[in-house]
Image (cartoon, rainbow, N blue to C red; front, side, top):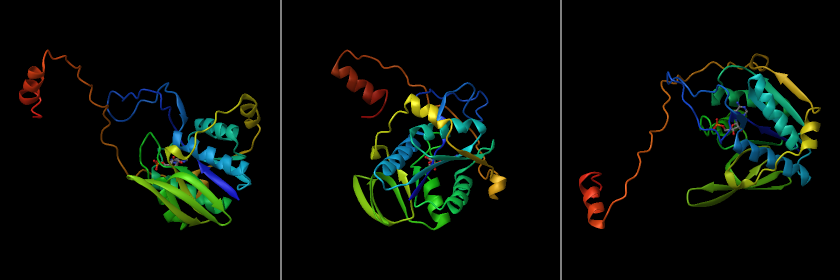
Length: 249
Ligand code: AMP
């Protein structure tokens, strides 16, 4: 079974986000970029399926600028066999990403597609669901455990206050939650080997998908600065402040 994994290039999660002075967007100048953490979990799961003999090939795909090939190389170093880069400098919204992934699914015919549950930059949490609808395949979202059994896949889903297990008939779409696995680090020899692994490059135009934006960002603002705390001298002073200053009592 071929497993297709969608990986997105995002700002590294350790970076403190800066907003552009004109509030039109986040400032990406000289900012460290990385693979979206939920996509790392997706790659790890695909590689584990290959190690268990369930998957025969792992294909990583990204949509983004030329620099996004770095994240594809990371996926190859982690164990993917082949990478597909859909190159574009446009900001591609979820629906267009899902349409492009649908074209790749049509070409590659994977038995399973694994995506992150959300990209930590735009926090959309919708690409996997849109892809499932576009290609007409069953979906198991927020997966915390996968069990493959012939043409069936059991997906344990993290839902509010508990877990739900569903059975999907393959081919299917899965999105990863945080507890699905702990991704490995790429080893130096694997990083070297990844440089020689195949990477196909295509474009949205070649795939016949328009990526024009349908959503206009009006304003981007950083979170409000936290006010410093104070120490009160007594319980009576605390109650007085809660009643008269913050008015929470
Ligand atoms: P989102 O719906 O934008 O929160 O993203 C959910 C998941 O969709 C990500 O974790 C990726 O697996 C996939 N995805 C989103 N954008 C891209 C992209 N530009 N290239 C490849 N995969 C993407």
